[in-house]
Amino acid sequence: MDQNELLELLETKYKQYNRPEFIETDPIQIPHQFTKKQDIEIAGFFAATLAWGQRTTILKNANQLMSWMDHAPHDFILNFEDSDLRIFENFKHRTFNGFDCIYFMKALQHLYRNYESLENAFFPSTLNHYIPENISNFKKLFFSLSHQNRTEKHIADPLKGSAAKRINMFLRWMVRKDDHGVDFGIWKAVQPSELYCPLDTHSGNVARKLGLLDRRQDDWKAVEELTAQLRKFDKYDPVKYDYALFGLGVFEKY
Image (tube, rainbow, N blue to C red; front, side, top):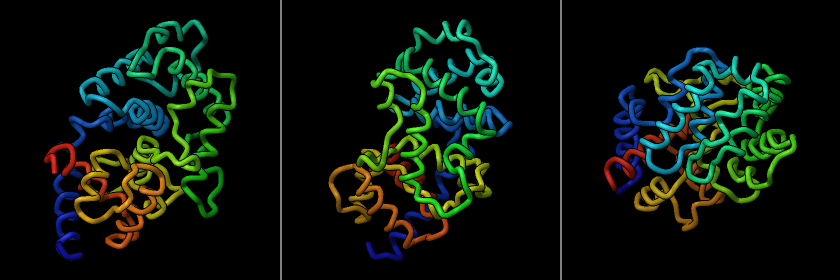
């Protein structure tokens, strides 16, 4: 297809999937349970962290965490004591286990006692941003407490070549805002135009079939290539087409 046909397809599928009905079966339903900024951040951060594997299992386990935090994640994170974390010891989602979960709780408590919002931890100034560097710096900050090395694998680092799909998805949730009601748009320190498209096997395969991506590996270089192509269609909001690629890959088996 030519560029006009491709744009028409991307716009059609973006509008088809970027609607409230999408929330019902997607991990973004977890932060949509809340209205307070910090609650949305924490719920979204955990939901994105767990977002691999079967979607029903992701939702079940993320909801379990919200329940154990008394459906008030910000209050829980700020005020928990070590004894409150015992219930999390047996948590397991694929390779994310109880030790990882408890460290995430402690790291988040450390951050929220030093920053009003995770937005400030990701983007500590309003200067121009380079998202891969912001993610890498956030990871260093997040793992500044004593921890098991294995836990670090649950936050990707684009500067080390990772596609960082889940963290890019989390940033899309926090930064993008339109009138469709799916993404939150509660972070203002960075613009949607600066974001990078979440990339996984499904979206990568669709992007290659559509001629948007040549690189064979689903790594950060592929993320940069894909996002550069999507910016040609909408330089202000390129990652809106994540809906199109995801929908075509997961729901339509394109």
